[in-house]
Length: 415
Image (cartoon, rainbow, N blue to C red; front, side, top):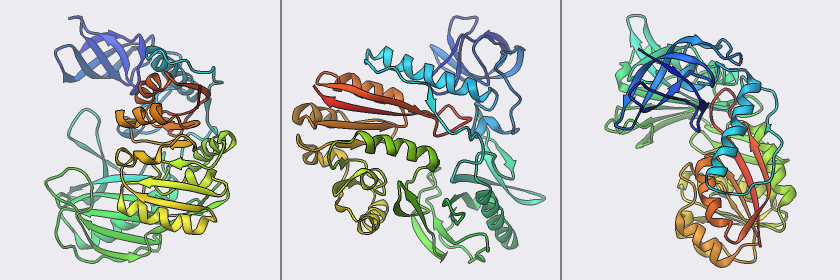
């Protein structure tokens, strides 16, 4: 192992240092100012990735992680919560400065002091041994798995539900290799639903545990590592959930995209509603949670995924808002970006397609409300948009405490 000094934290969550051969090294489990001994887990010509296995000189911001497997799901458990929020703000400022984007000064990172038990969705893998079937998580930097009983990030009902399904599976004694993952999610009132993904084209029916409202069992293509439904084998109970956002009712199911930290998400929604001047077009609408929450009378929801579209239509019907729901990708629905309506973007991590940016610069919607889970691609997009827009409001959120993930809201007006 090589000894490395860490200079700063970078977007993505690793510490940046330099190897003896001059290459940059991005190190997990490392803080600025620390000297660490690292195990290289990935080698490239110009850089390497590593994990700090020994802390030679520790930062005063280092704390003892709460979980043995923290690097798998929440690699920032090893710093204080105050340090986490400080570094998230610093990373955002650096990303936007690098793209030469002028942002208003913001007052730290918005959070609610809740570091644990906030996630309403978790995904676990499986491990089988002489003791039977276990829940597991992949270990960072390897192809191995680590047996777990749950996660401190999850609301307790999730892990209770996952363990209850595991108990039913153990009665069948399936091969762990025939199973992919289990996804569990819960509503604010404690209802829990789950989806079990198996590589098998058929799967014996299991009992529905009392801890679950509903369970779906899917066949998922064994040639793909992702837990993506190939075919619904069967459903037990009802795998839909209900929640409220800013007083509006929303229904979603175990497969829908829905935010995992609702209290912080509502803070961002309240800001969008406060600043939105007119009824908006929501271009990556998901289940409609932003557009329907902030609209006064009318909105348009654009979404590509058919299952999520079905939930958006249910939510529109229940909302009291006159909503047009459009099943299309944002890139193929550019005609909905027009000069007279505010537009909302909450894109995937890749950010906005160049065509979307070009359409905004051409038609000049009066406002752009851009909520992003990836401030690096958001900064790239806003660097182009600032040709004709000014950022009037800017706020950073800690949706995912104890992890490096950062959410940013930027509200732009045409100039």
